[in-house]
Image (tube, rainbow, N blue to C red; front, top):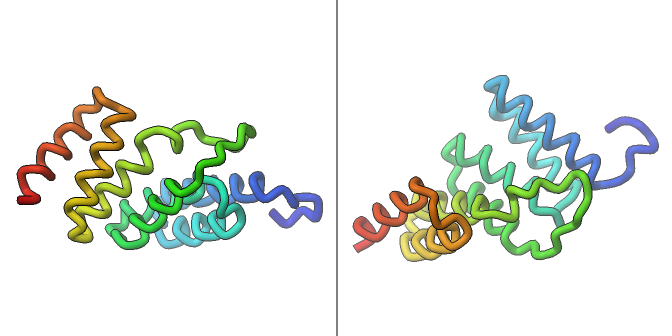
Length: 140
């Protein structure tokens, strides 16, 4: 990150994402959060840092930021085919984390809709099916 020639934002954000994941694995969530927020600031037009920030916030029960990060990821439609791209952020993953965070924020209807969208992308996922069943029976 300190190299003068390290100017490509996707690569810089990738390095920051790796630092964030490393700190998370070392059970240093606030340091992980710092690096993932920096990754978002570095490459805000890519889904990867937003999804990883959402996951970290989920792990810390920071529902508002997890929700906002997942929703920001879902706003990004341009899938750049570069080596720093993580295919999993184009699956059900951002819908899943947005759904869980929405539920915890009391946004029950939106949580159901997001979970349904996640299930469209991963129809055989048992956990998503259970989440949707729980949400639809509890949202009444």
